[in-house]
Image (cartoon, rainbow, N blue to C red; front, side):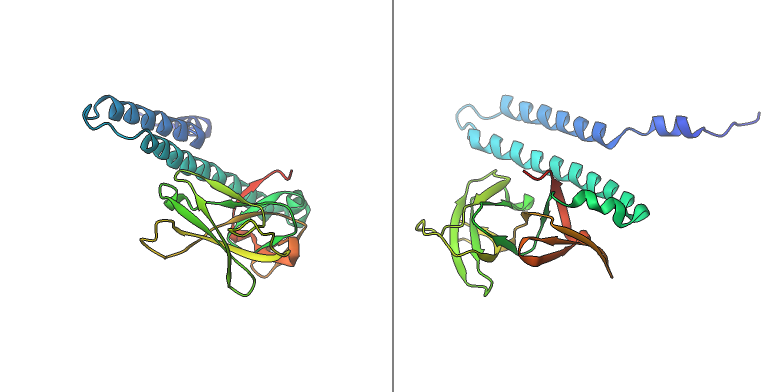
Length: 216
């Protein structure tokens, strides 16, 4: 008997889209969380904040998976069409671990996904590397806004700053760099591919970008 080759259409339909897989994973997670709640020790119930942290952590991972897929699609698009298509990045906010220019408006800092279940402290350093501000980050938070003030509420000078997070309870002073959103003002082609110019003349390679959103 002659075996007919599987058509492209049939093969494509047999592979579930990534969005469906993510949705299925989230439904499975909710079922597991429900079972966990139903079977907890009534004499020692689990703190409700623990559930909130679990939900926030899973949501953060799900969001990162979606963002990576979007960036992958955009990378393929730009790789084939060059700088003409790259113009669509201008005016958008991109997320990258890089210095950020503070010019009076609040900056949005992304909390590293691997550390969102911990009580953290935001560490702000100036261009010279000195710590100029710190602030608490509640467990489960995915991002935090910094308004340019130090711990006492004093307004800091405009300029370039770097951000990181560390354990708020002092058990470990190991810092993890934190990414920040900044507006793209220019896109150009460099030796390593596309390069974005952010406020303050800060250049960030496309390969360092981990998120993108519409500019306000």
